[in-house]
Length: 221
Image (cartoon, rainbow, N blue to C red; front, side, top):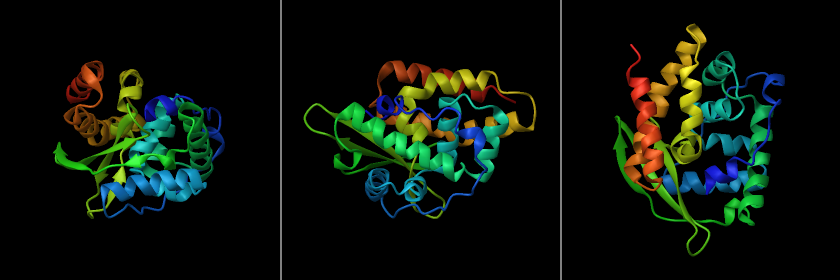
């Protein structure tokens, strides 16, 4: 549901025009609250709170592959945060894209009870969401070191972006920027993909793509 809606988001060209801005880290006390707060912030036009509910590096990586950003830009977003102006454009487009896809605001989805598990030493939760009969999906939420929860976009949207993540990984440059992005793949993408596969909601095709990408990252020295 979410990955299909996100493919409607178009913010090409906005990235290069914005300076970086460190996001305000908020997080939430439960996985369910993180998802509800994210949905409400998206529909309420509260872009800072929408980004505050998201794992920051997962947002930088998804924006990078979706908009074909170079490694230097992605590395800057990983270290300094996604620019505030780009965040605003992204969440506004996300809200509109979801309504276009689902014919309803994202905040009207029903959020169910989470299932907790660990992946590569990281605590995750799978939170079911539903828009009615035969219209179910999940949001994957990641625990921070301080015990607060944030939505992990890579794990939540992996079924729509794994192939893009894999193709971008293969062409990362052999320089400091490329090394920074490769490290984010190891620290963020690999645990997120294992978590998404552990949940089992995304199917065999996703699992094959995810395992291939994990193998590529694991073979790096």
